Image (spheres, rainbow, N blue to C red):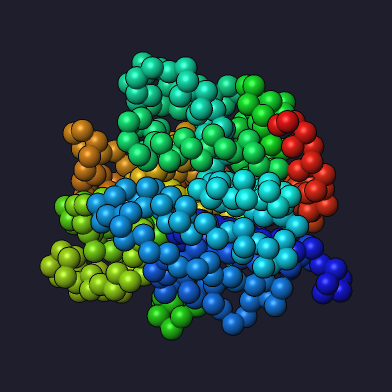
Amino acid sequence: VAEAMKPHVAVLPSPGMGHIIPLFELAKRLVIHHGFRVSFLVITTEASAAQNQLLRSPTLPSDLNVVDLPPVDVSDLVSDDMPVLNHLCVIVQESLRPLRSVLVNLNRPKALVIDLFCTQAFEVCRELSIPTYSFFTASTALFAFSLYLPTLDREVEGEFVDLPEPVQVPGCKAIRTEDLLDQVRNRKIDEYKWYLLHVSRLPMAAGIFANTWDDFEPVSLRALRLNPFFQNIPTPPVHAIGPLIKEDEPVTESDTEILTWLDKQPSDSVLFVALGSGGTLSCEQFTELAWGLEMSQQRFILVARTPTDASASAAFFNVGSDVNDPVAYLPEGFVKRTEGVGLVVPSWAPQVAILRHPSTGGFLSHCGWNSTLESVVHGVPIIAWPLYSEQRMNATMLTEEVGVAMKPVGGPGKKMIGRKEIERVVRLVMEGEEGKVMRRRATELQESAQKALNDGGSSCDSLSRDTCVNYNLSCMTKRRELQ
Ligand code: UDP
């Protein structure tokens, strides 16, 4: 296709690797497989080394243009103890003030794809007649809940977590109140208000990209597709285009050392332990985890972040800059005693390359949606260790519906997971019968994911047919519905 003829779209993620990674993957796919030109709009934050590596890679295709939005000074609006979501929403809101002129300068892209927390873009784009799609970076089960949240907000009195029964989103699996996402556990706080604000605007989208595939979340997808007005909420067409995960990771020198070490281990023998881009443990919990790993006598790679009692997502805004020395907080003598069996990596590891490696046989994960997809796509069973946001929902789905994960049991009050329990679960997943069953199930899903993404597969078709070809059309239909 001649350069000038290529359709030009813009993609706008919220800050944070869990948002940037899947939207960047979408951008790459639109360029490489569908003949688009993409402007990838980046909200300027203190970027981690990992983010720079991804977005500033010299090998990006020439039709993928990374555009930095002007930096904003939010120092008067945020504080250190502010919950991550509030912080994120404030930065996004301030950064999107010049969005109109950015889009005009880019010659008005044919469409804009936004992340959930960027819904201010809807008005700007409506004014410029640019159809706007929403890419939902979490599960479709959470998407359905989110679309339904304004209704729940109107109909339920008191806190959702105090309801006597699980929350029933029509047509979907009921959600146990203890699994509800953090942002809706207290309706009086700003986190809830920000979340409600953005999700209540989802119906304004021309379409929804869901990072999932038909065989992985059949129930939620069916509920949403059944009718264009899901429970009287105007519902944009939902396009399941996943699993979109990071494919080719830039590998640094220290990454090569990890992969070379993995090359020397037997197949399926290594447990990878990593808690997403922002997950951190308390000092006491980190110590228990280290002891549990050691006592299990299984091979492992542990991505270690400085433990903190402050918040489970403490590293979100400074991931990668947490250049730390794990020896300072690991149990005394741990590194020496586990030499040859375990590898401790400070702060960040090449997760996809590790999960793809044949020596990796298990993943102790916080169950962020990207980590979930990456594990399943590579046929790796999971020890579910949810920390924040909607991760408890994901952990329950993986354990009880999908059958690829196992949850360790917490101590009294379910707060702390002790070393003996960690040892038990690690052994079960890595060498027990349960682990084998979960690995077989994960391998089945790996195959079904591949099928969905291949030419003629459901996700591949969704992206090329429903969206790329018809994007203008579906947007016009949508607008007529809203008028
Ligand atoms: N990640 C990584 N190395 C790490 C930790 C995380 O490459 O040491 C990547 C991981 O592969 C995933 C993303 O960061 O793509 C984390 O996204 P997820 O949705 O799992 O969790 P979040 O960080 O948003 O909580």
